[in-house]
Image (tube, rainbow, N blue to C red; front, side, top):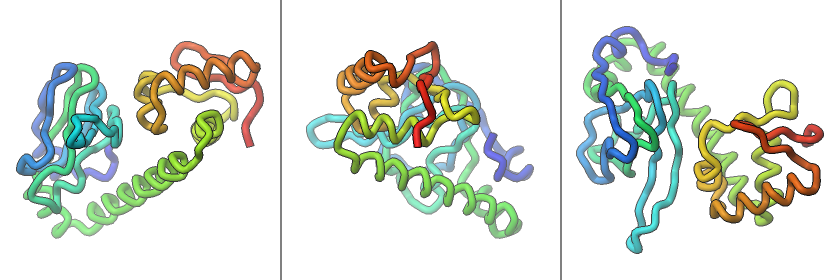
Length: 198
């Protein structure tokens, strides 16, 4: 749940159901506000001139998306439902008015954006690691649970490959090699490390 949203903003929210593959908005479309994912998943993508998709983010339940739309006339990417999903629109004018009226809400929003910037920097760091195996190790080390050994997968391996900037074939091959070497164990919905990574 997006804990920065105040009651005044929440009561203005309008829900919309999406089927898998349905577009929520397209790049260059006029912005109407930001969205909270209530259920399901949406992927944020940019399409280059050759028609290739670059995955920017996969938004899951409890996350918001299109925060920059509050300060821009048009969306900067496409948002497409990866699964059946329900989203809630928070209209731009209402959110901006709430920021002016309630500095605590504006500060909570800024804190959420700061956390997103830190995650983005981590992704940039991962993309600069050339070895696929080292890139996967880096991801696993940063995403282990409290026990230091289990990494819960929030999406498909194809989603993870996109997040890591690898082809899904390269990710599958890397995970298979790591499993064969006894470094990891692949389980349903998670990866277990044979020992905690530094």
